[in-house]
Image (cartoon, rainbow, N blue to C red; front, side, top):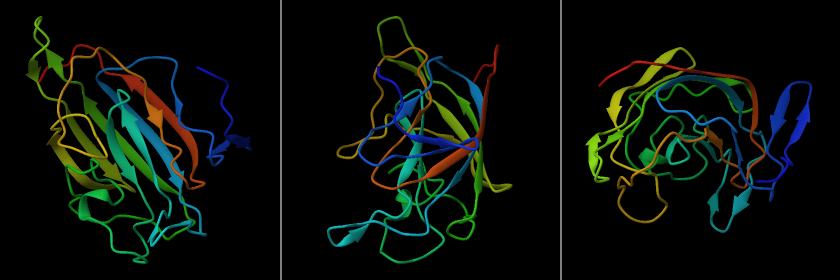
Length: 186
């Protein structure tokens, strides 16, 4: 609802700490998303753990594909919190992360959930993620909204924004494009 406060320089957007997330004005359902990201080479410590490169790409504002500094092993991290996971739901089949400080790419193929007229789930959302040219999630059935605490669950919604998370680390993004996929069924 406000103007973005992230840093924009030479076609690269970088999270400005403490300013929140960014999201598209346009709402999407089924879509293909290409995005390039770079985790900083200076991990930010939070308490006893590390918040190195912590960010995410949220499909329809609620289903998160995690971004983290998964190249280095500088803190124990739950497996479904590493780069390319569907946050707290799916573990990538392989760690395809580039060296810390180098650019990474996600190509995300997303099928939105559908709901019955009474608001109950008709068909779940599905996601395929290609990370740096490597298939890491193949048509994964999303179990519900990504939540920090609690079990994922579906709630009735329509199309939603693609949201980039500003989560305590100066992650950079570039070369972002998205296209709607019309007329798909699942």
